Image 1 (cartoon, helix red, strand yellow):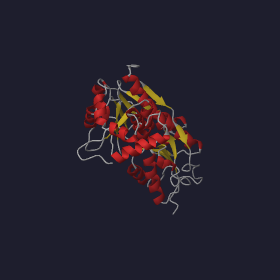
Image 2 (cartoon, helix red, strand yellow):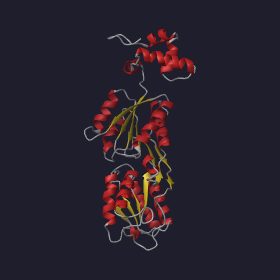
Image 3 (cartoon, helix red, strand yellow):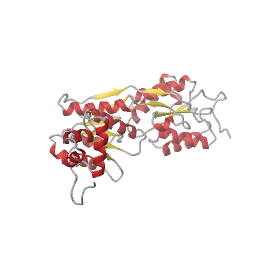
Image 4 (cartoon, helix red, strand yellow):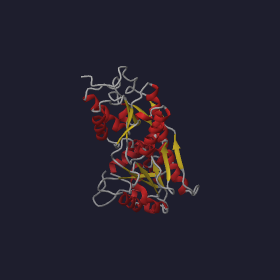
Length: 344
């Protein structure tokens, strides 16, 4: 029953072969309510037999509005896949589609934006860009709604983010409550939320009377930066007893290197991550971490796009979410004997 060469199977062909109306086929293939389970299975089987594939480009051209949201994301941050997955669900809830475009060393922000706008995306959602990356998007925001997830860099751009200052304070409060004084922080550089996390760490250390113990190491949101920080800190004559990493991947790199160096986590060294990504909850990682609510972030980002597109709001919004601490097995009281040493 496959379509003949050179001829594209249409929705009308599927309806005729299935013995149902074209409207029923449209509801089934659009995963819309109405047809019962038996009808759905029958129509889907006929569509597959005929080799039917929706001509999405033609459908978009026929619409007055594309109802497509363009999403720019990176491939290097552990939280990004969580956010992208949640965006699909949030967009479908408001009858929007999602078009993804990855930012790579060979693909600039400007290029990805131009491609998404060329595909008739009505709004843009930015995830995980470096602080300086979206600067030129002010002009784009004059044409289409732009929403940043994870940071706020433009006065005319909507944003949805976690209160990262508060998140870092939660982590330090937890460690200080366990009795730690020598608490170091591996910085995230210019990446989203890094500056606020750094500020929150310093403020919390001061609040606990630990200003003299403040140590900030340069880093980013990769395992390599965590591993490098571990090598530097653990070679110090007085290494810390606890570390707040820039994110979960950084924490994982730190823990792995510390273990190979003979330090036990958390018996010798406590480690806290940030994001509560999937890696943090793995049994062999069991990482205490600051949780970001990616589902709510995605919901609010799509709502912000819809509000702008539907004319409900013309002024930019900055939606700040409250973080929480997920306590697991990577944190405990500091070693009683004082500064740690390799366990050998």
